[in-house]
Amino acid sequence: MPEGREVLSEVFSVTYDKYGDFPIHISICRAESDLEQTGDNRHGGLLLVDDADVVLGISLFKFDNEPLAARFFGEVRIERFRELLQDEETVLREERDGLNTRHPFCEILIREIENRIEARVKEERLRRQKEAQSKIDQEEAARYKKAFSILNEIAVSEIEDVTNLGGKPDEKVEDPPNGFCIYPAFAQITVSKRYAFELRLSTKVVHHGTVIKVATTHPSVRTTTPEIKISSKDGTGILRKYITVQGNEPNVTAVLYATTDNLRTEAKISVVPEKELLLDEGMVFQPETVTLRPNQPRRIYLLVYTKIIEGGSNITISSDNQGIQVSKEVILVNETDAVRHVAKYEIEVWGEGAGQKGVITAESGTHIALLDVRIRSKEEREEEGKKGMFREPDFNYDPDPSLRTQYSKETGQVIIYVNFPSVKHYLGENCEYRKTLPAQVLVADLVAERCFYVIAERKVDTRGVLLRPEGRLDEIQRQAYLLSRKHGKKVHEALVDQSLVKQCQSDAK
Image (cartoon, rainbow, N blue to C red; front, side):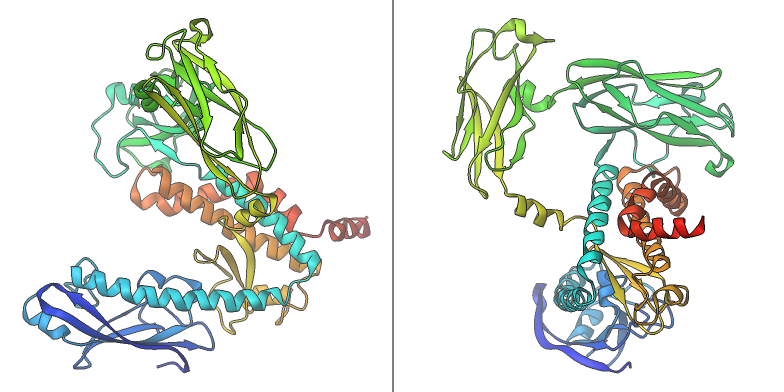
């Protein structure tokens, strides 16, 4: 058992079914350095035992890979656990090497344990933040603030939600017609949202080395996948590639097509504005939610479906908060304003007082549309910006780390292990060289590398773009390289003091 100080000692109860209460004794300790939290050589984690001291497993559960929990170890003693085993409750895995996380009793128990670990993780985060703040001067803090603002903008733009119109990545698909087709062949998409069509192909027809060109027939319907290359790394048989499409203008139609030297397949696209609300209610605000700065007007639109709300109808616009105003109180619907039966009316919205919230209502007879409005100050906006995916790095002084960097989902920080040999060579044992040019370049490289990998991982896991499950890591790495090529220079320019770069370049001449 490692040495460390106790940070929690508690007895609580878990109630399950007819059995009543199960007393649980939990003790969590914190070591002076990070512990191995996985594998056969694990020294950290909570040892799970029953009241006869029989070991049931060892785990930190969802915090097993959380850097902020890397120093935690301890014990969880579960009284009356053997009663469940005697009644043949499947509370242990078949391999008898841990709890069966799907069993109702274990689900309740694990949730209670994780809640207590999470509280310790938050304490650890605050402690490390205070340590880090004491070591960062204003110039360095300004560089970090700028760089991580850029990284958060990149994360938002790159991990935008995409609706998958094709099949599930793991489902079996039949041979595509003629060995090459876009699926589905027709789709209605909502304006300003992103959708993924599926390109299915047979390598018997589309051979390795083929370059597939992708385009649309309308300039306001664009694809972010203009070209697809088929290589031997993709494997053989039926392959599935994904084509991302976004419509920027409502009430247009387009054809999405993919071509090789001798093959062509296409799908028809209809772009509609917030289809369900527009067709059901007859009108909809675009966007449906808006955040304003005090006394700064924002332009929004009211889309009206004239087959439901006919020409000559009056639409009244009102606010439920006197601090939030609109430029028009009444709109007269005119058939001549409509394109494909949809009329678009511009409205300005503004408000006074940060923190105000309200709802703008458009009404015509029984038809209604709602716009949620919030007003926030510049300071609030900056504070919300801090809640992005990434924050300033944490320099960890563990004496014998196994990695150069890690990413903490809990804090959004890239953790740089100062005493990793190649890192210490440039930063120094106590980070005493970290303001030098070589150290800044290394930190920029470490931060960019880890952040781009995290963004790529989120992209791959949320978009369903894999050809096969075993290709996940290769696809994440490929996406990370693309992000580095696209955004790496900008991140380096923000993280590295450019006056040092210019001085170095001048000295080299």
